[in-house]
Image 1 (cartoon, rainbow, N blue to C red):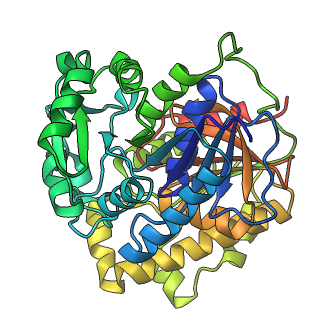
Image 2 (image 1 turned 180 degrees about the vertical axis):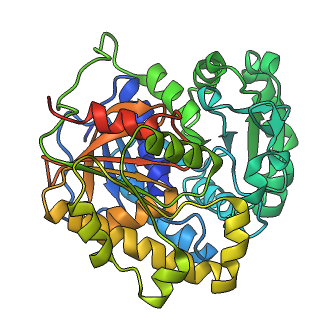
Length: 420
């Protein structure tokens, strides 16, 4: 049987690439599989972590649970020692969310008595204290994430969120209690006739390592990429070289940047990219819906540019409200379709460096490109690796969640993947 240390399922593609980058950083050779594996999916012998990227964050609950369980059963079939369920570091404040139901289904199916809920990624300002989620120094429901168009974050308490989504009890444990975990677990198992969730304090990087070590006997972990990276560090083979790089990050060919995220971080990155003199094209929803703007007309503009172009639909909160006249779902679908078409055209015309911003947008792009498996390389920013499609080894694909990356992220991505 293969020596797969960690088998992970993520609820969207950028979340998958995010945690895959932390597995890679910890010294684990990692393979990312887009959507459910098929009978033709192959895994080379050096792979130690496998991440399956689904698109289950906002779909119907039954479908989300079914697809997730198919993925976890497949990972169990290839001998994964640990399971990891990766979801957004800011959770999902809607009561109809799929995080709780998926966690419960895994625990029930594999007879797992407890799991950990660890959303934190301190390097990106995502932390948990006393069961409360923080973005920087602000509680989640008071941050800019409260205005997310698909999953507005209206609560900050993990126990409250899980009370609406899960069927078991949350137990919050502070930093000092992590060290005495054995006694705590014994007490909790006696108190809880059913399964339960643990929510430990995690607001410093070292907390992740402490948690991974303290609960090393646990088979199923859930949360953000912070604990995933810590778990990989704890599990890595003794003496393994953390700097092994099987592939070159750079490649020949032109690049293109496609942005569909409306996050405050992405808006700043777009402004920086434009200020540095890169050409940009903004997609206006009304023109897209009337057919005045098409993939063909935008591509004509792309071909006229001498440096890496940016095509974006990103808009401020005020502009999003104004665009609601046309219907949010209709606009989002049209933009995803357009950007996906542009990515396919770019790849077909030899643009080997494709940089995408936005979780939903990235998922749509990867599906349109048709790539299924990816080698994970080093990162442009924490949680944003360079990826090589196994089916197209000359391509370098970079997919970032809207809130990830430095202000100059797009420029960094262009420069770091360009062959000198």
